[in-house]
Image (cartoon, rainbow, N blue to C red):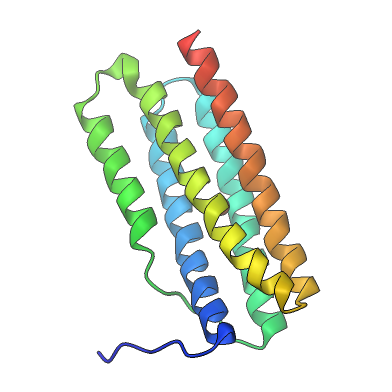
Length: 160
Ligand SMILES: [Fe+2]
């Protein structure tokens, strides 16, 4: 397959949006796996709650595609695949009593990646005056930031 060259800021933004769509699908799968791996009902609940939010985030991305007049599609997101792979490998080698800590730490890593992905989308979208698209992306970013704070608090409690 011939690799597409991204020549303009618009093409770059579109490609990043497509990658973000894959990122959210990967997050949904990862949250399901982490909810299975976690032992604490409270932590399972946190993962499930964020999975519901992630479905809203996918809907926001679909809306962003629509507003920009782009056909909705995905592009490879090797980073999120890598984060999930690392989580699975660490869970596999960790004793059951460590599983909650590993699951929360892995989710935290994923959230931080998502935060950086949204920041990298929001700044150029804002620079291009795409106010409605920025609002949708900002809503996703706010959820990721909130979740990362919850995960950090949960991790602290686990270690306390
Ligand atoms: Fe997300």
